[in-house]
Length: 137
Image 1: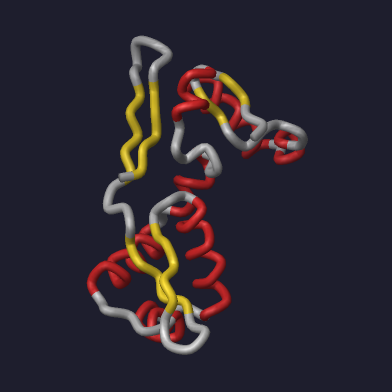
Image 2: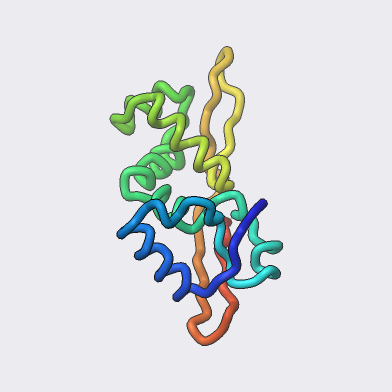
């Protein structure tokens, strides 16, 4: 995995720069950590901070609540309950799976059923030093 080491301040400055001029992001790793140690310890190394923030939108959190609350028999049922198209929902769920938030279990026939495997995402930032971490539990 390719990543960049930088402070929270550096990440914020870079993000503002990218908002002004998206071409600035070309060639810059999508994964940022405050140190090599944090990068190696991260269990969400496959998901950038930017992607995690987008993934945890209110609409997507509602989908996770449905998965947690309902005994789903199919993705089709989740689409009905969430009011989202299956194709859109499938892309979102793959991102949740990559982040370690859900997993897929075999359903009836060839169907796959999403199961919630993490109930919390915690972001810890030490404002006085380089130690910060993202954990999914």
